Length: 463
Ligand SMILES: Nc1ncnc2c1ncn2[C@@H]1O[C@H](COP(=O)(O)OP(=O)(O)O)[C@@H](O)[C@H]1O
Ligand SMILES: [Mg+2]
Image 1: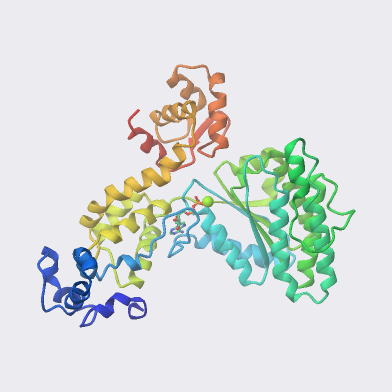
Image 2: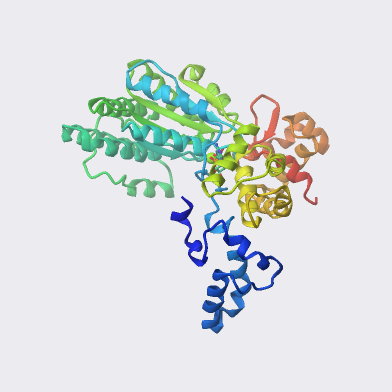
């Protein structure tokens, strides 16, 4: 494998394994005249005066050939597909069963993935989507936003799902009928007031059939979604497939819309149509759903995902590395688990920096020590800082007080105590933080950070 993806190996006269030894003297900065790669690099840089000042960098790149930054496999970042989806076999199997049962018309609860930020919910949702696509299901995805009705996003997602099924449908007019209903649904937002009114009327869902009147267009989202889902499911039945609608950040769906969505899923589960809504969200999502409809627990199977255990975290690091013929010492794996604490985002973030820093395979605990400060400062800016900056000064005080109380969920009363304030006076800060997705409340009167290690981060910041 290495041979096919190793353009820099061409710089070496010998095979990859022999190259670092031949260029051994590069480490202390002394040029090694017998090294073919070096000679060629020197020749190349000599040809152009402009590049002469890049020579030292070029040497360093050649030297660290075995842990090549260009081939760094790790992927820190929201929703970034990891090089290895570690430790999620149970959830993947469960979803396989859901797909199979729904396809066979068996009653089945759909799945909702919950967890803290950075545990891999979006990535898992995307993996579920790939599984549905592999079974030739139609799929669509939305990312919920606070204060935004799901009507239009759902319309676009179902449009996409049905377009995926359309080429296999024997009766194109059935698809057109559905698209007519879908267009009417999309345009049936209740009358807004003021400026947004004009905008609402201008909006066209990009469906090139005329809207059909009389179905899914009452303006009442619960009625409309139910009718739309039933019709979409029936199109899927025609082609012997299903439709999966994926909803990320599901806790952000406005309360009325959540209630409508649950009701529509409930109706659909009674008629047994092959359409499922698969969600992902913060740990309080089950509480949000059951507050909206008491039967939501019977509609969804909740899968709480969390940190990776040691074995899975090691696998997340080792499998992609070994595909590049790089490995880690046991001490390095110990140190990485200590630093990343098994949180997938942190695993990727540390590994990415460590790879760039490490001169050679195996990657050692010393390499981790060298890389840690840079990894931490990247996390401080990108993962923690970007979120912290979204908070108002009052909200920041609230979070700092929470952090002072430890890393477990804390009571709102104790936060008020810590700040020497009346609990009621802090409600706006608390509600603001919940809305911004920085804290959550899974239990009445208790709050916790949605971001792992956030308390630790805040305690390490100057006040
Ligand atoms: N199972 C996993 N194994 C390894 N890395 C993962 C896994 N799940 C997620 N990641 C990585 O973790 C990071 C966060 O994933 P993401 O799905 O955005 O989390 P969330 O949606 O829960 O905030 C990404 O960089 C992703 O590559
Ligand atoms: Mg996500």
